[in-house]
Image 1 (cartoon, rainbow, N blue to C red):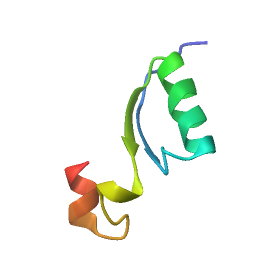
Image 2: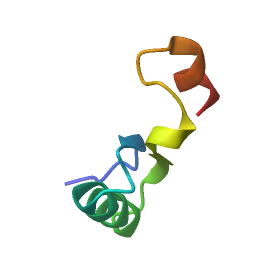
Image 3: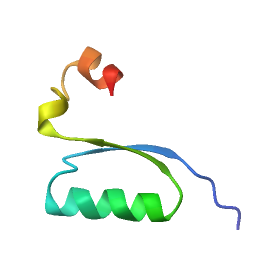
Image 4: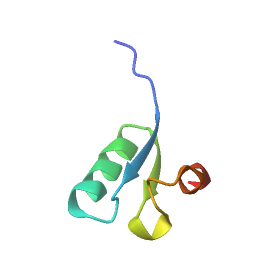
Length: 51
């Protein structure tokens, strides 16, 4: 089976589950953007676009 690397954004990356999700995605070779609460409001499209 062919593995495709993906671009992933993880919201809540400073929490316990978020840190593990980021680490696992990176281990699998994905391009990961780790977003934290301080990075902006997830309901604001402009803030998400800046990530």
